[in-house]
Amino acid sequence: MVKEKDILEILSTIHDPEIPLDIVNLGLIEEVSISDKDITITMTLTTPNCPLRSLIKQMIENKIKENFPESNVIINLVFDKPWNTERISKKGKEKLKALGWNL
Image (cartoon, rainbow, N blue to C red; front, side):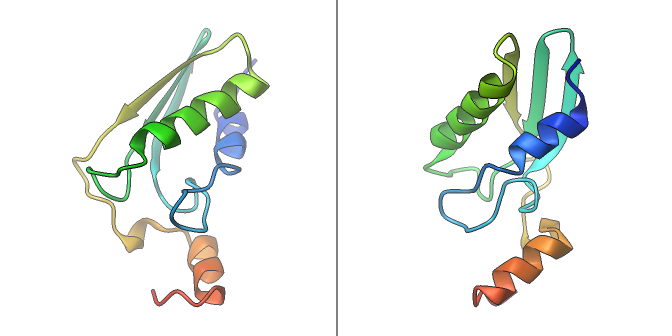
């Protein structure tokens, strides 16, 4: 049986193509819900006009299906709470600062 923890672990292996940080620590994941074979991920992007939107969604779907091939992956993008650097986890901020990012 698939659990939210399993999905978050998988998502933490997927990095934003433009920021050297995974999408969980970057604060992009808002909710993971699982119902039967449906895995629904509600997430945001750093900007609503992200040119890599399709690539990020495809990376997520591929990685989840790699681990749970029978699953149906649904990705909902939401932008009602705009992303900002406050959403980055403490661990994520430490990693970015170590790479020279000014947060």
